[in-house]
Structures are given as C-alpha cells and as structure tokens.
Length: 396
Image (cartoon, rainbow, N blue to C red; front, side, top):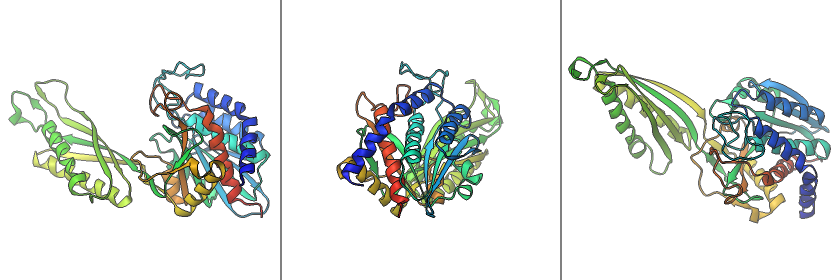
C-alpha cells in the first residue's frame, strides 16, 4: 500500500465516518453486559446483512459472525471485536451517555464494534481481495468467557481462519498511533476462590472451635512467597489477594473464611506453577490449623501470544497506513489480560493497541466511570483492519 493508497483509504473511510460514530454513540447509550448483548448483536447483524455478508447469530450466546467470500482464493482471515459493557455507573455527562443504570461502555467495546463495522462496510463495498473474510463480534469479553464459549460452539470449525486479529484502544497513546510486540502481549488471568472451613465457637472460648480466620491469614502470608520463591526471577507473575470475607461479630469465631485472588502470568509454565503452589499452600496451611480448604480455580484467559508471522503481517499493515513513525514496538508485555487469548491459542494471531488519545481527550483510563472511546480513533482502526485484509487476501 503506497502513501497515495493509504491517503485514499482514509479519505474513503472518512466519507462514512459520521455514520459509524453515530452507531458507536447509539451502542454507548444502550450498553449491555456480557451474554446480554442482544440489542447490540441485532444492530451488528442487520448492518452486516445489508452489506451482503452471510450472517450467523447466536454463536457463543449473543455472538455474531459475518462471512464474505470473493474470487477463488482459499485464504481466510478473521477480524474480531468485543461487544460487552461493564457494571459501572457512567459519570461523563455526555449527550450519548449510558441510559442504563450501573452499566456503561467503560472499556471502549462500543468503539471496537463500530470500528470493525466501518471496516466491514468498506470491504463489502470497495474492498479488493480474493478469499474469505470473517468478521467476529464477540460477547462477554469482560471475564465471562465469551471467546472460549464461541470456540466451544465451533467458531473456527464453522468459520475457518488462517489467522485472526483484534485491536484494543489505548488511552495515553496518540490517535493515529499503534503499539504491538512479538511474543507474549498480555498475561493470563485466573480467578481463585479459597474457602477455609473450621469450626465455629464463642469468641471467649476459642479452644472449642477451629478458627478459619487465623488459618486464612496464614494462607495469605504464605501465598506471598510463591512469586519470590517458586517463580524464576526472570519471569513475571502476580498473586493478589483482593478480598477476604469472614464473620460478622467480634466475639464469634465463624465457621468459614473466603479468600478471593487474581493470578497472572506471561507463560503457561509459570501459570501452572502458580496454580500448583496455590493449591498446595491452601491445603497444607489449613491442615496445620486443623481446618480444611477448598480451591475453586477458574481460567479467565490464557497468556496472549502474538505469533511471529501474524505479527509481521500486522506490522506491515500498520506501517502501510501510518509509517514506521506511527508504530511503537513495545519492549515488555502488559500484566493486563484479554480473552482474545483463547483465539490466539487456537490460531496464529496478533493483538494490537490503537491510540485513543492523550490527556483530557481520550487519555482517561479504561474501567473508569469517566472514560469514553475517542471517535477520532475509529477510522485509524478501521483502516488497519482493511489493510490487514487486503494485504493478506491479495487479489492475485
């Protein structure tokens, strides 16, 4: 893609920019939580059908896939966007602010959806490619397992892809700028609940009970040794105890105590080590106090690994739009997580960051009640999706 071609692509996308900004604002005003995205899915499906896509709904609950095939090419590419909102009360005061109490698009999934729709529209009406394009609109990215459910329901068997790509807006990165890295991009994320069961008693007669709070406190302290003593110093890992629940009165020893953990790693070997040590520590520490411990270990996402060839393709597509100066190669992975990792675990793929703006315009962190996706970023993300598709599905 030459500079003239890139300029023409951006100009063509801007001709319809307001249409997709309006779609984004409409979705923002009507946010839906994970696996409840029926209205959003309906908007997506109707638009794709209007543009000539073969549309499949209901995959992964409320997921939508649009397929468009041209020519005789055998290559296939997948482009993914997420659709769900968060249980947060919006405070932006925007004209299109959420109309749903305690629910808002605080992570920009409304922008991701509108961005992929803009690309899908261009590719259907002006795209030059030979092969199959699959646009994947995923539900329930925010910790509920939407990607893994779509995969379990046959996503890639029903819609085969050679490679799969996604983006996420990045507050603090200038609009028109991208960031990516080879290898691990984001950490795995597991949520762990440890329930310690003892024996209740009067606080004045502790010898008659088995105090689960004392056992739980010992577990918390022992868990802090995992990263420092069981994980190789050159590997990153996080074991955070974010909540402890037990008891209601100061003079009563309760029956049980519950710990809630967030656990993260940048590779599967470290992740497995963390799980093994957490289970062992919970069990043995509880036993040492005469209590028992049960561990509920739930995988939210895997380490998100950008495959080398797919990443090179993503970089080429970025540089075709913004040049080398518009791309930051990230030196380190980020300990945040994304369930797009379930897709990159199945297929070669790449996940990139799209600049959302700096300072007061687009710089507010995600998962914040004052956040909003920056409309100015939409055409840049759409241009990258188009560039990816046309470069991979070359009309030869």
